[in-house]
Each structure stands twice: as C-alpha cells, then as structure tokens.
Length: 360
Image 1 (tube, rainbow, N blue to C red):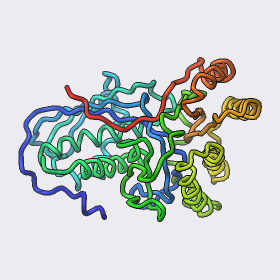
Image 2: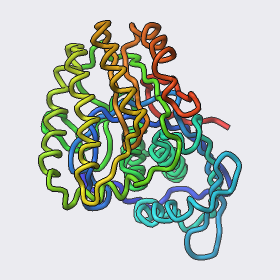
Image 3: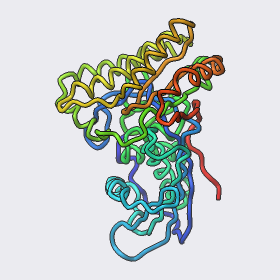
Image 4: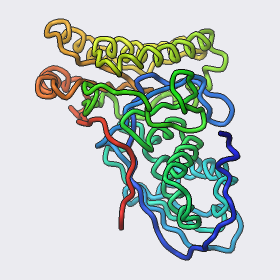
C-alpha cells in the first residue's frame, strides 16, 4: 500500500452546512518511536497501549464557502485558541491532496480534553486523531461506500500527518506503527491493531499517570525528533527498538510480566538517554521523576509486585500494572508516590478500545 491509496476520488454527494463529532483517546508507547524521516514516517516500529479515560472530543462544524484558501477557527474548552492555528494550517496543507473538500468549506473546530491541558498527557495524539476522524466522517458523507477498514486506515494515515503518535489512537487495545517483519500488515503509513495473540494478563491493564510537571516542556517533541538525525547512537537505538518489539511478541502471548517489565522500563530509559546524549542535549525528567522510579523499584523488590513504569517525552510517570493488583498498587501510589506529583495530581486510566463516534 502507498500514499496513492488515500487520494480522494470524485465525490458522489454534496454537503451543506452540518457538524460531526468524534472522541479519540491518548496512548502510551511501550516500545518508543523517537526519530522520523520523510513526511512523518518513523525510523523504527513502535507499539502502544490505547488509553480509555484520557481522551479528546472534537466537534467539527462545516459550511460551504466561496473564498480561496483554508478557513478555520479552533476552540479549546470553549475558548478561541489562535495559538493552535499554525499547527492546524500545517496539518491541512499536508492532507489537502487526500481530502479534496478542505478548501471548499469554512470550519469551526471545538475540542475538549478529559484531562487538564498541558498536564503532560499526549494531547496531540488524541487531538489530531479526533480531528482526522471528523474529517473522515465528512469524507464518508461524500462517499458512503467506503469500508470500515479503509475509514480507520485513512483516519490513522491522516492523523499521522498531524502528529506521528496520533496514528496509534484510532483503534486499540494495542496498536503497532511502523513496518516490522514479525507483524503482518504493519506499515509506516498508519497504525494497525496488534494482530497477534494477547494473554489475559494484559487485558484491562491499568495506567495511573503521575503528573510530576504540568508546565510546558523546555524542548518540544518535534525538536527532539529532529535531533536524532545526527545523533551518534541513532542507528543503534532504532535497531534496539525493533528488536524489543520482536522480543515483546512472545511475552504478550505467554503473559510473562517480568519480561514485559524489563522491556517497557528499558524502552523508557533508552528514550530519555537519547535526549541526554543528543547535541544539544537536554533532560526532561525531574528530580521527582527519579524519586518515583526508585520508589517503584523498591516496592517491587520488597513485595514481588508486577508494577512498572514508563515515560513519555516529559517528566510525568505512567505507572503500569495488571488489573489483579489494582487495589494494592493504587494504595501504594496514594501512600508513597502522590507526594511527588505537582499539586498531588494524578490520573487513573486503563487500556481502552480506541476512538468512537459521538452522536449529537
């Protein structure tokens, strides 16, 4: 499959003024994507848990227009957000060849997050995937015959052009993005639902997100990805990620939680090692991030728990644990870890099934 598969065909219908709405989740990568090439293509394969409670709901209002160019407004939680316009404009420019109607309509984009903005949750993943799904809902109105499979593939393809990790937020519970010889159907163009066997140990997996730092990151993910181009350890890192994904396949099948912990924690630390060894170098972890990690290690050693951590490109800690340990680990989090969160804030989440259409 190539980009040509997603070019729009002549429309069968016309649309007047209307609106569509989708809710799309964030996701947390187990094997990390860090480094890209071309137009938002990954240098290595990644796999992520789709989340459930951390999501974005976007409503797209549209009406025909006659003036040239793109025309849109963006509202976050009811407030006009002009600061988001450059990112959406760039997104529209990237996808205009795949959605022929983009310049024919005026858009009002209303978006709401279930989690605090700038809380360190991947709002670009949930936000861009929700917008991509709304645009695909419009395309489905123009071409009702498109299949469900094509709808999801193209939504993921479009979301990727807005934010790479957004392509992993369309479906669930596990999504693979990036071509890998051991995962049939995997591709760099869009995310796919993990097609292999998943042990019951990984069903309803819990993710408590500890908000260590709710401020804006000193280095954006876009800049961080770009620093991988001349990174002295880049090729080794890409190979490590692809190897780790291959190692994860039998682990997910057998339910080996110790093996899962080893790979997931190693991946989190490798991601931040790339940041600390780039030029210029930078550190996104905070002292409280390290304190939480050490507390998790101590608790696991003392109790034999299967709790572990992972990190996104930021200071916040995702505490991962099987549903069977939900009560014990949650008690541990409240007793020993919440004190290291900014304003004692944290979010309880679990693995979800992907995006869903909202009926208005």
